[in-house]
Figure 1 (tube, rainbow, N blue to C red):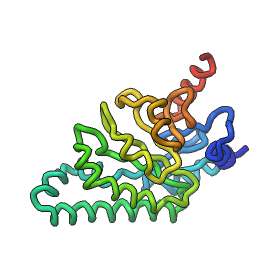
Figure 2: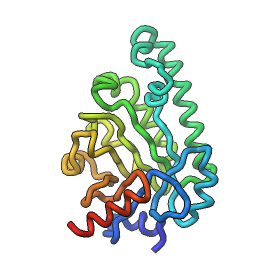
Figure 3: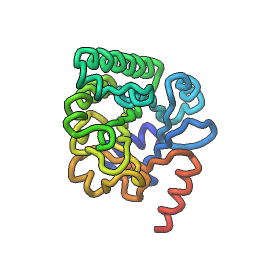
Figure 4: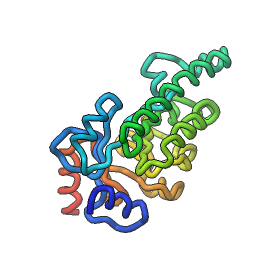
Length: 220
């Protein structure tokens, strides 16, 4: 089966052996069902991975603001009109990149969702300021072959808030986040992409890691 066939079978609920592999990289010369790429490198990634699904990696508006040292929470609290203007501006940038990536041939998006954890936002802040923007941006890619939301942050994550977002899969760091595979399955029927044996999709940060993961899982 092709990677496209394997992903389609997995999404339909059919067991695929070995499980679908997703690697957060698009280094040429390696194998995985799903790889990822930032926008500027997307044409090259699609060209060098003709037999894999290639996802566009995008950061959500809150995450972009954080990386630009823009304190959206303070601005939104002190000057709501200015805060919404800044948030909408970043949101339009993300939307434009998603549409450009899909037009360029990406099979979907890897949506990096930052902000749904206590050190970044209270539940009221994330739910009130950012959640629906994340939902609207993901809806732009809703008809794609495969989308994945990577929930970023440390410690507790507000998985109950994001569990119904329109995506084919969720992923997160099992080292830095305190939610188990079993807990997540109780909150969503959506597929889970993790570096764990029983995950629906085996996720790794690089191709060497996915090989080591498969070797380790084969012996357990």
